[in-house]
Length: 428
Image (cartoon, rainbow, N blue to C red):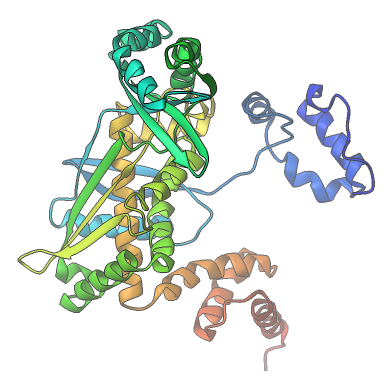
């Protein structure tokens, strides 16, 4: 940076003006920063409404996973991801699952939790019971804040009160449980928590501090299961390999972190494609993975009586169809239309099925050829492009890179130079 990052009134500018100001502030040639502005005017205006200080957008590849049969219905699943092999792997596992009925899923009601923290309470146990005694009053007050949600069949359902201790720190925490219907629910539960705070403070005889939802959405669980045909997977040895790979993840948090990342490769791609909050979903999933005090696998794999692989997955998925980017981003809107889902629970169930498919495909690769072979074959195309290969050169360069076994930029540049030299050499 050659100039100060202090730009008074930056937020008041339009995206084009902001871009000109950051070019000035950076001291870089404008052409080096032009990719930040590579978006049409309509999308730039949408971006400016979605976040602060917007200058442009970044395009993430969006693919369509095929072959998904969920609860007897077929789905084409949009997935937004920058990682090679994810969409192909999910599609392949879904094809294997079709052999024995596809995926079966179920989900809880879309209940989110708002937390209200109360400090400086002289009698925490007494306060807890006073708050529980006032439960009907507090639920009614919460529902007054969102009559439309109540009309749609949602609204506050129950309260829970916990005492949280850590060393010399203690507080009383009230959980307000709210059925948010087809929304992710953050705005609804936060509004209710804010409204309840004064009354809660009076009943508890303390001071309310935080009033916000929890992304540990463990009342909003979604489950997916599938039977993967042993022969289609590659035989009994492959089934045993997958089960043993799962057992490793269940026992060892170092393996579980990457194992669960594989699940989230599929889930986060659907979450992003549909305009939902990837960070909230990731936080809730990884928190759920250590719900018993130890980080472990979110999924389970076992053999059934016929020797086929049974995969199951259960985790919280607080997804929405209304509000947020799902309703403001045109690509997210199109993705939801393609899926044809009618409720947030249905979207969550399909998303869980994708996570299970992705996990199964990754374990199958690990238990057979290793993860790198398929992954690097696809990654080689990115490396070839980065090396400067043009459309007519990419296929030959990728073939040489994969055969060489070293999918690296320096090797790609070397091979590309060789290919061009061969092409320019005069014929005998």
